[in-house]
Image (cartoon, rainbow, N blue to C red; front, top):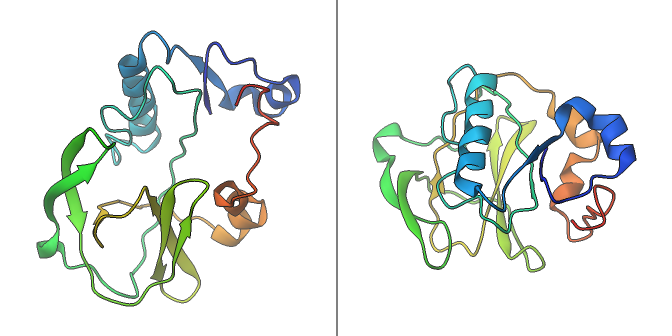
Length: 180
């Protein structure tokens, strides 16, 4: 977890996550902090993920960035064709766009819109027991950004710890800090 240095982190958070909390200067140097987080991800994934956060994703208004690295090698139920992955416009914000690798597949998928978070959530199944959930602010088309997964994770354990609740309307981050 990367907190803005101006955000007071509650003592109980520091006790529980001491080695997993870093204070960064988002306010005065957001781009360097974005590169720092990307470097952490790149080192953690042994170079498999190099640019988790795209330019502009960390701003002077960022208070908290949560990053994690997990690998998963599986087979999509509805397979993406590598030859159909191509550079397309990705909307970083209403004012800014980037060209990124986008994957395409036709099929019927579970989908939800979360008005409070202002995003859409799409479920992309792997086999029978696992799925990738991806979110996007106001989906403009059916394409999603290309992602690489390469380490086994017991998703039942992760979700059983309440990680799925982070994406619910009732998500409450006030336990981290009074200002988040």
